[in-house]
Image (cartoon, rainbow, N blue to C red; front, side):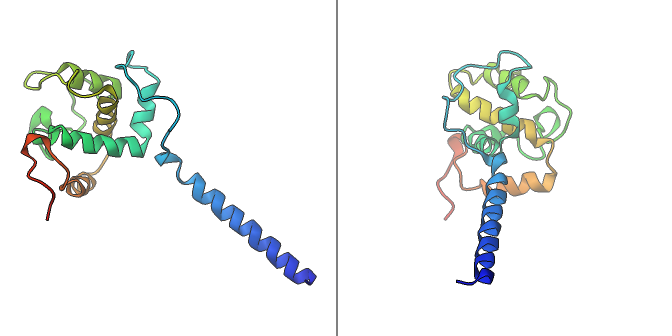
Length: 163
């Protein structure tokens, strides 16, 4: 094999390695941790270190959207909902951080039952991360996400898959 062919193979190998590194680096925001167990406890306070993970990991937020629908939250918190039911605005009564949202879901609020003991802590973390991100999305993006979940179960009103 000539020197030119060796150089061509070396360049090709380097380009392949670079492309693989770039592709793997782009997956960081959807990283799924298969290490430690999911959280089994509520937040320890507003500065709980687990909150950033659930507020920024797209996989966890996506799963939170599914849980939001599965547990029937979309029955009241539609887009756009009136007043305090609207989770797409920035006017929140009890704070918009993941730990604050967790507490509202777990302990309930006027007109909303408490879900602690009815929903697993990891699911509440996921829902909290999803809800915390809603007001950072444009209405069109929230609508598209809602449409994508149209075939998912929604509380007790689910009628089966879209057919």
